[in-house]
Amino acid sequence: MTTSHSPLRVLKAQADNIAKIIKAVERGENPIEDRGGKIAAARGKDSVKFAIVQDDKIVSINLPWATIRITSEMALAALILKYMRGAREDA
Image (cartoon, rainbow, N blue to C red):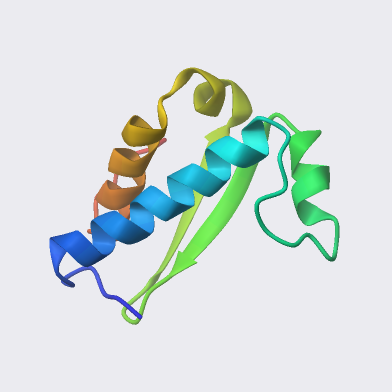
């Protein structure tokens, strides 16, 4: 598990993976198991809320699907990385 002070390369790898999954879900793919149907239900809403658990905090992010659709995977990863490192900006 990581903290906001973990090595940048480790946090970046995690942010890249999260962004990859989010973009896949936005395209209608199922990159991870959806036992409770929560991912499918989130697709029908205006935005998606997800959390990243770190040793020192839980990062909760709410992103509109429209933003995800027009934002590149790399830009999403950069935004997620900011939150993981402790940024306090609204998405």
